[in-house]
Length: 316
Image (cartoon, rainbow, N blue to C red; front, side, top):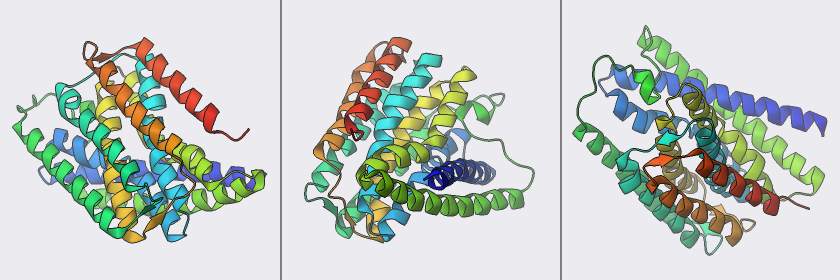
């Protein structure tokens, strides 16, 4: 048991390092190719921080562990809103961009409702996966169009203010970061899934509970690190866009690509878990509307509700 716990801890570290390398290299390549820092932040960085969820879900799906694959995404979305945004707001109140309130948060709620409807039969087919994949393509295109409509940023504003790593000295270094990041993610995901399943069987836990908690928390480490560092640096505006964008990508991109790779069957994920995901998405809307700032007391509310969800979920 101790060995499996150590391997899970090592896997979480590898996922964090791999995602950091992938984001740093791909974002630098994107800006070098002419994308604005804003557009790179909305697409490359937001999706890059979700890369652990993607790799882990595909790995679990190919191994026939649909509960881990779906539980990873559902649990990550609940954790993103409840714990990550909650802790970030506790450190520093978060100003919210008007676009997120009017467009992105409602889209995140809509897809949070759509996924349980598609999974009423406890499975996700390749046809349904193609629908979800088309959705993430449309969402990315919409964000690109909206970003190009934004007024140009002052030259003095560094890309780091948008959560985008600086451009490296040479594109070969970027390619090295991307390749090493992907390799580390694949290896880390294999360790995490394999040893989590063994640990679950040791304690008599279901694969669904493991996917909703340990795996979801591990694959959400890049979002957690990005948001907390931004809050400590008093740049917490990155956090809401990062979390909302990641949630949309999790539901459309990860579930879409994963079910295209291998149709999913997830009998262990209950309607309570889907309801928690939808309720957290609903709860976020009025909190964002209150003065367009996510205050510390609202952050405490989110963290408290997340703690309650984990308490109800965890095997007694």
